[in-house]
Length: 316
Length: 166
Image (tube, rainbow over all chains, first blue to last red):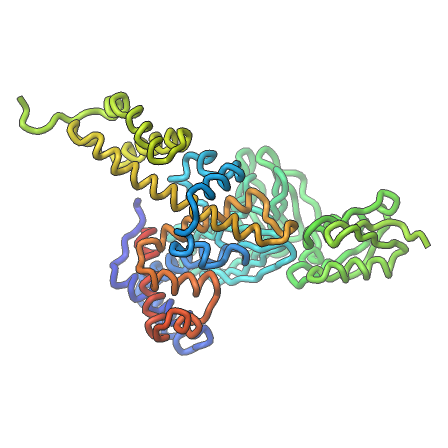
């Protein structure tokens, strides 16, 4: 509505620049020329940012959905009307009939990861984000603010100084986190959000409360309240490197943590739930992590299928 | 007698034509639930546009909006079907949650909305680039055009995305 309008010629130029850079991503000269063009006028930069955000939508799909033939009309016209009606009926929950107000839904998930996948990205303003396993985020950068909406999963963010001084906001269902020059993580859990600050500080805002959290502190918050902060440790960031760093970690917590990175579940027999484990375990190969665990503690693994594993006391 | 057609309020428009529109949509869609939803959406869209048609044009105007919504609905169903088919090919434990699927479908629909007005080759080039991750060289051979045409198609698609959004 009140968004600034940009001359169409500038949009065309920005599009040509983007198409050129995509052709040859390693062409440093073209990149520099493009940056010069962007710096020439605020509208150049704004056009570029808007295109960048739009293009980001196309990166947001997990691999199984990122297929051009899903949107290929000619391939789909062969399909029978009857078939889609029955599929829609079977799918129920998210079919059109249940949503009703789809006209005004603007749900855009810019980036997503699958189970066991982590991803490292640099946003348009230079901010680095790491997506942990099974994470969905929307990135909405406008002229006024930089907003990241965490829909699912976990994020680590290292904010960059913004030339335009736009505020940075991470939004969860429970509230907003505003960083103050910082490195911090936000995780979405059922009905609550978890935040941990590693450098700088953040400001937490829920409907009811506003609270500052400094480096080395973490907390949980719901829509209603922010819990008392507790110390955090950088070892929790092992996932950004593909590792779980355990330090006297209860086995039941270990099982739950490993479960996040693999399909199916890892359960822990109550008999061994309170055993403690220390070590560094692979999150990219969780079978190996489990095998390493079995080696270092007197536990054994019971694989029912690849997708159901139990850690229990070693019977031998 | 006024020379111009008398204007009417949206309430009258609703009272006079709502059940007729629902019936009209019901015949088109063969489903009374979808028809009721789309009839409602038609009026909401009319309300948002702020333009109430003259009495003589009421039904023509309503069906014009409703037709657009029917096309949107078919497009949505087409995408949902294609996606659910693709899901069937996945091993069961990798199937995303219902919420995740809904998000993915929304994203696919939004992408489709951005691109649907483009010529086939332009659209295809852009999707092959952004979704399938092909290089311009691979796209060029897939579409049987030159690499420089691919670059032009991509730029054209970006302009179209921009215009669809802003």
